[in-house]
Length: 437
Image 1 (tube, one colour):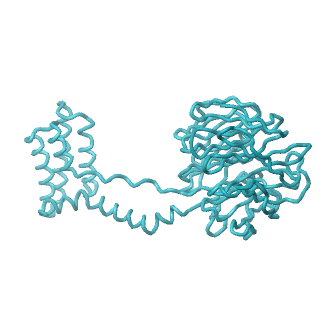
Image 2: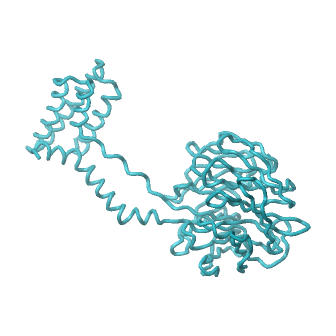
Image 3: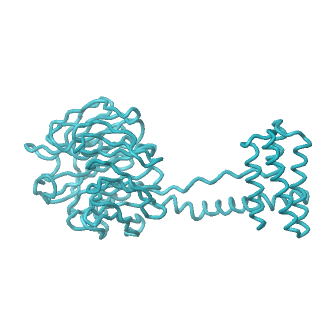
């Protein structure tokens, strides 16, 4: 390696290489931890807050103020943002997982009832029973971009892949509406022989949808929908309570249903509050686990735990899926409603930038610069390097300024386009900044 090349590498690529090496070390020691940073988000309706839970320690690590009456919550696939539906404010608060602060507020103009995220994180879908539509939020701009007319939508679940969503109805619509999220249109309605459909969850393989339901004559049920035929294949009896939520393990082997026996909403049946464990292979209840007063339920991404929000107790029960026993009870805010998990993914590493001389050589090879024109620019960089080796930082800065002026001249006379010239100027300015020019 020549003295010029070595010094140039130190000048131009050294900081970048050190940055990449540091980032690599972080990837080995820190980013791995970031990938494992699974957080639970619990909405506290009467506190107007969200409790952020560390799933490793089963503890609340932050409390985030949001809008009035937070209810349902969804998390982006990369875990970087949580979207909180504020029922009494008619808004959605967007929480940054990196800072645990609200970074945007989306006005809805309608009373919201449910929320879900598209599989690719591009859109958020918010149901409004009062407006009989679903509002579609573009996550790039955090604005409502369209609506889907649906009669009295209550909650919804989006398939983990593909373009289908499944919408429940909180009042006498007797079924589930299937929507296409690519066209934002209704596909079909699936009838279910009940009075109210409440919560829905799609299996990880997308083959089935589990829907909690309530019949005022035959009691609570868990309807299992075959997504291929769009028909109900079985109705699983549930305890005589109100079933506000359902969650499915990542392997699809079990469904967990929250059974609220306190009559908190819609005239619950009065039975004991619990969680029903449903074997999805046989669609039978294999265990009933006593909890507080459940309203929300979610399974951790690794499938090890089930978290249940207890609305009357201001707690979250943590169940181990290994033995279906409660292993911890966490205090959260007032009147906890929903819970969802997100695993924070780090921002992608920036691509290493080519050196200044490599950029000039590429323009010569592409015919934008003649050999003489390119050599003149390269000479200025080499002179800057020589001055720097001699300890003449000011003179090195002057050579870089001369380089920039020559590129500006080439851009001005049409030799280089702005798209060709500006990266050279930016790279030279970055070098000047590193030298303290």
